[in-house]
Amino acid sequence: DAGVIQSPRHEVTEMGQEVTLRCKPISGHDYLFWYRQTMMRGLELLIYFNNNVPIDDSGMPEDRFSAKMPNASFSTLKIQPSEPRDSAVYFCASSFEGDPWGYTFGSGTRLTVV
Amino acid sequence: AQSVTQLDSQVPVFEEAPVELRCNYSSSVSVYLFWYVQYPNQGLQLLLKYLSGSTLVKGINGFEAEFNKSQTSFHLRKPSVHISDTAEYFCAVSKTSYDKVIFGPGTSLSVIP
Image 1 (cartoon, rainbow over the protein chains, first blue to last red):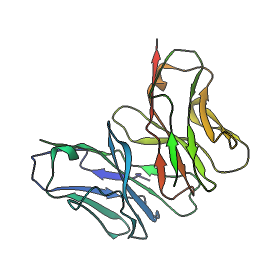
Image 2 (image 1 turned 90 degrees about the horizontal axis):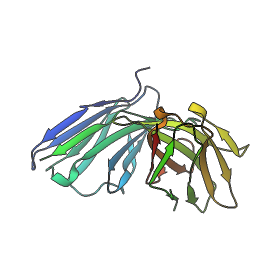
Image 3 (image 1 turned 90 degrees about the vertical axis):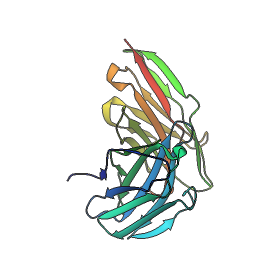
Image 4 (image 1 turned 180 degrees about the vertical axis):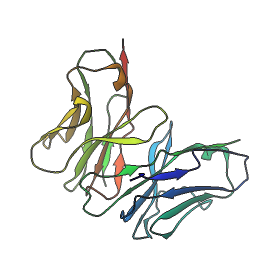
């Protein structure tokens, strides 16, 4: 199993540009989570899905952020327009109902907005 | 609502010395508890978890943690640390083993040669 796959690993973009982060969960996992990690705020849960349906998006900072899960094997997190304060590492994680081992995390996308 | 407190933001320790990283949680319901490790420029990896049963939980790399319900604590210990243990350690809580997880702020462990 290739694990949770995130792309790109690094993204540098200019303020005001649209950014799309991608995640492929482990096959068979029906939960998918997006986290943001910064020095100031630590690990924040942005949104999570169950069976492709958003369950809790209360952590999404503002309307500039949106997330979709069109099918069980793919999710995107989009920021439009991007701002320097969005610079962070964005992690995707997946699990399945009854998973005794908890989440499997991806390697993250380091986003820098200049 | 659930929350996690990690009392020490940074813990320096000499190689081969013992270490304890402290974690306290608050929750109005029964919880599952986790410790994750994050090595530099990597994702998070599960060290160990407490779901039920024995309050002493053993994990990977020689780490163990003890669940104390009365003190709402889940401290992480290792009797002898190695340079390779230098990393960020996160305590986390969840209502299930697979659902929404709330992470603590993290403790940076630095092992000094």
